[in-house]
Image 1 (cartoon, one colour):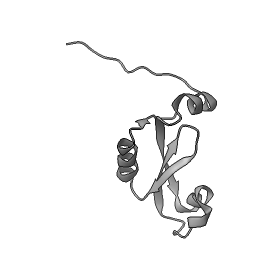
Image 2: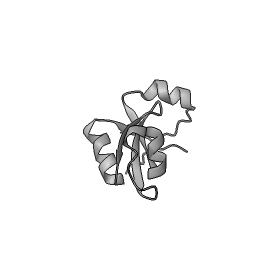
Image 3: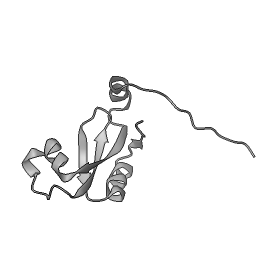
Image 4: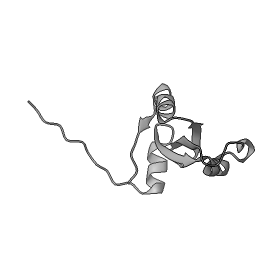
Amino acid sequence: MEKRMAARIALNDATLADFGLGSMAYLKKVKAKEFAEFFPEDAQIDGDVTLWALVSADGNPLIVADSREAALANAFENDLEMVKLQ
């Protein structure tokens, strides 16, 4: 049985933004009070609610959802490669 190893690539913010714009995204867990920073015109949610932002490679939020699964589903529907930031 052949073993496969996942490649790990270290990218800084600028490189990630250029490399993955339109094709890569990541999930970010946010409290509703942080939501106002992304979408100030829609900041009508209780500040203690946990939300999930799907964020593009350049750091701009694409969507905000009430569950991780919903945000992840949106990424797959839009053929976005999910990346993990460390």
